[in-house]
Length: 493
Image (cartoon, rainbow, N blue to C red; front, side, top):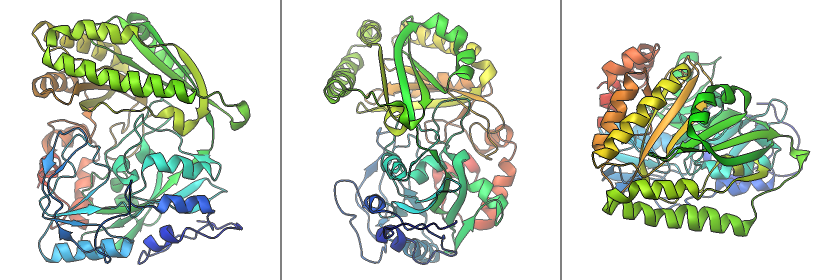
């Protein structure tokens, strides 16, 4: 990475976290703003041993949604790449498994372990910026909601983002997390290099020149190949987004969605089951000098936090206790959405405030099957509502460009994503089983970080490079140091 002069000193925390990493990046001297990215756990300093060694397990853990609960035997909170390598080396020698965890926002049990839980909160912040190419190096524990402002300080931004930004960078990469827009890939497609700690404690730099096969596998690695400790991302010049949110007739949106998605920069819609209205959000990219017109803070507080989250939590609880009320509650929710237009920096517009907890199943389908898939899903959910199991959460529909990442859900095809959510106090098992059966019949692929029941036999048919991925896994983790029961099902033991 080409260094360029800067009057400020680099982030000591970010640089210190790279101790023991070989080869080190050639860093830009980062401005003071970068130092803020090196903070530890949100709300306070990182807890744990000074040397990052495993300590006693921190009791039971649960995912954000409550979909999985487990008790690791030990927890390690390393403060540098060298300490990560040491933890992995010692755990492997003792016959223990290691699983890194980020924000715990995955709905699948991908981070569950009965061995050593590896928290990477201290590995946070930018370590390098190449202003000529727009490539940046970021420590793996950096939360996405901090990354946007850190890049903005350098006049850069992520090309696309999902609508939740609580995840760590490594977690988003490892699960094929994505945003919306047919001109843009998910996070895995933005990666140009990775620093990986493998089961033998080695620290390896991966890119298309050094280790191209392992690099392609690790861009979406499911945590099965090692511990991602740093990523090089292709950023873009910072930009604004003009968001247009409105309600439209569902039939019109479904009929025109693919065509509109090709014309728009970023288009998505939400649909409350049982209603005839779609809630669309279209984001248009604008240059920085276009002028800001953000949502006023008071309106954001009232509409997004009090009504969209606080009031909606109350209606979801009511619907869970009295399912017969859900159709009326959904109709009221769909009617209550205001039309609004606003313009702000990209990382503020892409994301939404999500306080109401839910469980989620999302499948990526070939774009050309969207109309068939949505029509069938609408009928399925209507049938379930008549049977006493109505869905109170909106269905979300997004798109992504095709990419070449081996285990990306958009590998080799333009994709449309249909996500079904259930309030976290409800049991989604039967509903998700029916939805999954429908999507599988339409050549669907599940989001790796969301709920699904797929296994290795299925994946071998669904992903053309699945065998190549397994070969890389066998090469770097023959002892399955990074395995767990979930990965044994999805990838094979």
